[in-house]
Every structure is written in C-alpha cells, then in structure tokens.
Length: 119
Image (tube, rainbow, N blue to C red; front, side, top):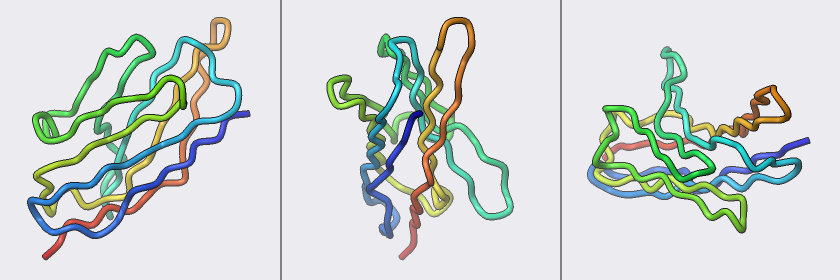
C-alpha cells in the first residue's frame, strides 16, 4: 500500500511563489514516475509536471519556466516550486505516483491541496 501526503498549498498573490511537497510511503519500487496534476473548477484534471526515477522532467507548456519539479529520493518526496503565479494557476493540485511492479504500472493519488492565486 502506498500513501501520498501533500502539503504547502494556500493563498498567494499574483506574481508570488509557493512550494508544494508530497511525501510517499509504502511499497515504492525503484522504477517510478512522480508528478503533479491540477484541477480547476469546471475543468478536467491536467498534467502540471512529472519527474522520473531517473530524474527526467516534463512540464506542461502553461507552467514551463515558472514551475520546477524536483525530488529527494532519500525521503521519497517530490516538490513543486511555483513562481510567478497567475490567477489561472488556481486549482486543486494532486500528487501522483506511478510505480512499475513486475510488468504492471500501479497508480496512486494524493488527497489534493488547494492553491489559490488572488489579490
């Protein structure tokens, strides 16, 4: 069983910064992908950024150059540093972990953390 615990959301003014954290515990195998997705009211959940166990990162075009994903392997924790925040970044942000177990990918989600960008 895997648990993902997110923290760091909140209210921030446009142009501000926030850092999200997601700590994973449980059966985390060596080949995995961790990432962040977000869902705004009335919209579908969308990818924000991912990072593989090998350190390869991927970002959505809407956050490139403003957000940085990183991880601490020793702590099984992934971070999302968000800068130059815009009102359109307002959403519930979800941590995601995909783990390769034998030949099957297992998918896990955190409970979500609210990020609100507003003056």
